[in-house]
Length: 414
Ligand SMILES: [Zn+2]
Image 1 (cartoon, rainbow, N blue to C red):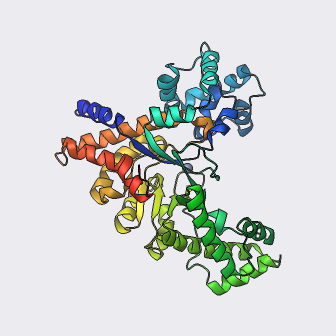
Image 2: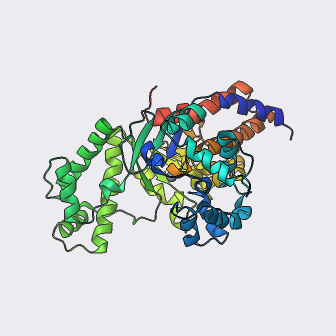
Image 3: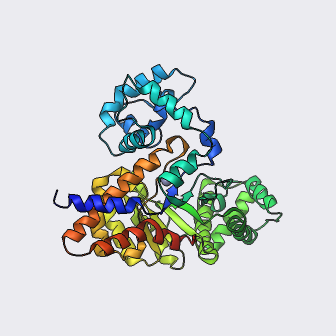
């Protein structure tokens, strides 16, 4: 390859850089320490998709990760499918973590027990710091695990938007309002509760954003009158599904408005999963236009709508493009789309990395980061080759994407 030396140089420079890991699903470390980890755990999380797509049944997958069952039996399940997924990009972080963290080049019949012992040995207090801070050089990792009880100062929580915008019953309203010693009788009271809830999460629990998803949502959203009617129906215990949905849609809009007011970011999942037509990033365009003061962090390049996503980033000043997860969904798609992003989107809108893993797959954050650096180095080297950037400018872009843009968007200061 023409720019091989340049790629290597860029990767080396990036390896020295502090980063912000802009999206994870990590619970507090204590949850990771509770797990009896072994080699099969390396195939938890996203590799599940590929294993099941390759033919592993969901119940075999459950057995593979059930520590009550013997490791021999569980490894045999894995072994039957591993060769079908090992060249895919979901599997690659496993092999990078295996090499760089545990010191093995492959998983075989001969070494799977030894690897498992080593993993158990290393699963002790401090493993988050060791992998995220020391290895990945993450100054902060933004994590959405539906909780805020982190003791590690580098983990910053993001919560599901549904925690405030989805209301299913009177009991739920009462439970929520009691938490904050408030009385909620009307829709207005509930909106006042939402505001207080978001303020206290931000002030007392370091919450910096809420996460939602691109979804087909009714346009225009329900009116306040309709929402009041639906809220009443819920409080009277006679709500239909339509009432619940309409109230949720109305409150989602209210939450976007409050996030602008309180300077919280709205993170938006888009693409990839299941019937991904329902996760099309373009479905968010009405919300992006209606809430110009709200900052949206649009995740995953909207894969496979990577190109459409670039135009969203270009046309909406309030939308940032976060490449979390994208590098392992498809490095090739990132490498072909990112040069187009440089054409189309101002460089201060792009965020390079989020591992997007949960506790059993912690090691793979490192593998994912290695892949992200490679992808970005390839893209920057190509732009240097074409004479569009010099090396210093390329490194400036890498710093923006890996650190400064997420730091600015989320208001993270050293
Ligand atoms: Zn995620």
